[in-house]
Image: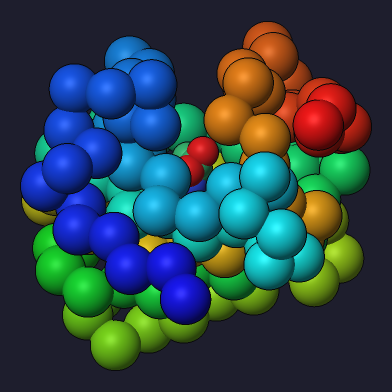
Length: 130
Ligand code: 9YT
């Protein structure tokens, strides 16, 4: 069994910061679960362009207020505690935080921890090397 406390991830390589967010990775590819599992904080007042061409992601909001806008159809959905969205079609989108958002995110295939968003909001598909 794997048991982890997010407090032990602060300040380690499993805490990844970007201009608009910080992500604490509780499970990564090397843990062998078939998905990765993260807590992500999106900073208030930010807009992030994201397009996970290589991954599926589900996101559950536990705190804050924001919206997601899908690029293909311009539809907007409010994000607030209790709302989950799943990017089942690798949906290109804008994620906006009106107030700081606390999100729990699951990625399939799992992130290795070495990915960085490119200029199109994409994470590359990286293989975990044992
Ligand atoms: C919601 C979202 O995708 N935010 C970007 C960061 C990502 N969740 C990550 O790398 O943990």
